[in-house]
Amino acid sequence: MEPIPAGSESDLYATAQHQVDLAADMLHLNDDLRAVLREVKRILQVQFPVSRDDGRIDVYSGCRVHHNIARGPAKGGIRYEAGATLEQIKALAMLMTWKTALMALPFGGAAGAVMVDPHTLSRRELERLTRRFTTELRLLIGPERDIPAPDIGTDPQIMAWMMDTISMHEGYSVTASVTGKPVEVGGSVGRRLATGRGLTAVLLHGMRRTGLALDGATLAVEGFGAVGQTCARLLAAAGCRVVAVCDRSGGWWNDAGLDVDALARVKAGGGRVRDANVPGSAITRAELLSLPVTVLVPASVESVIHAANAGAVRARVVVEGANGAVTPAADAVLQEAGCLVIPDILANAGGVTVSYFEWVQDLQSFFWEEREIEDKLDHAMRRASEMVWQAADARGISLRRAAHLIALGRVARATEVRGIFP
Image (cartoon, rainbow, N blue to C red; front, side):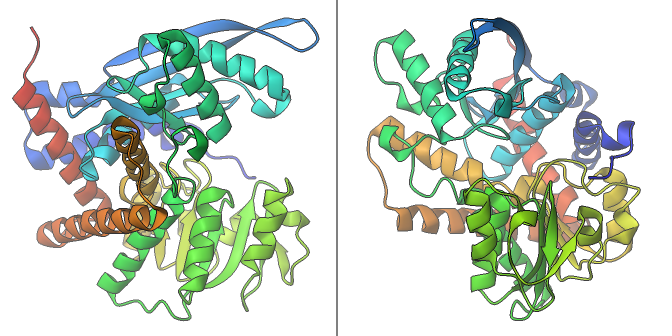
């Protein structure tokens, strides 16, 4: 995978603050309120020991960041990633504040990480690390305070260990303390596919808004994890032709359409996209990003489309499946080229929306059927998308600017109404 240019262009926190400044200018926020919204509320950094299977003890670093909790308890993912940085986690916490506000969910924004490659740990080591990290975060975590969810390198099993650890400390089952859990311990049906399903709903709404035909439209997906696979499958079923997918190993291209199910089976078995035996030609990530497709979905990590490669993008629509997939400099290039960009805080908000449904179900001990979850998610995504489109049309601005304008306005009003304590 080609390197992303160094400097502020790839600084996700600087990008997040830049979006705050743009929205604050349009909202005419005073300097005091702007200063509050530009910075995170609290940071908990921890170093903790973990016993390895061979008897060694290694010390790991982790953190949890809260950006703003004016609208409700903190909500956001936990990632296990060797290269995670505090600045990155601060940015993700801020993005989650805007995402939950845009979706009108009663949450604030949080994010957390352990700086570790989970693939270097055995299952028992992974469980010990998770339980110890959760204990370190016990100061913050709880249904009314901070509700973690899975992110890069974590999954429902890790969420189950986190929930069980909190429950052991409290002396009773606290199922609402995390989301993204297995359904056997209070997880919600429909959660695993929620981000990809929400992205699909927003994209379909956007295509109707712009008059783009879905039937025969071509799709390229960069990042073939849960989000990429789900939107590829749903869009293929709706008439879109999936012509290219890739992961870290590289990918495949076939203008006649790829066998998405065959590719997904390879990934489910622990393989790589490049290992699949499907008709088509091998392709690199750089080549995929430059294909002349109707829709491009960057769904892996941040800053995939940046100043150095944005000019090569020929898609008519780019939908951010990953947080911060398009840098500000790249955004300007894409807009100048007439490419429609559907921003992350709208496009990938399906996951946190169904996490909200899971939290509500746990609190009331009453669970909905999967069709109800899907209908509620589809309604929430289309409602938020239409609101963003209306704001963009009314002001003559991009969807990203409109989304941040709505989200920042809601958080600013909540912050003003609550006031400054003491």
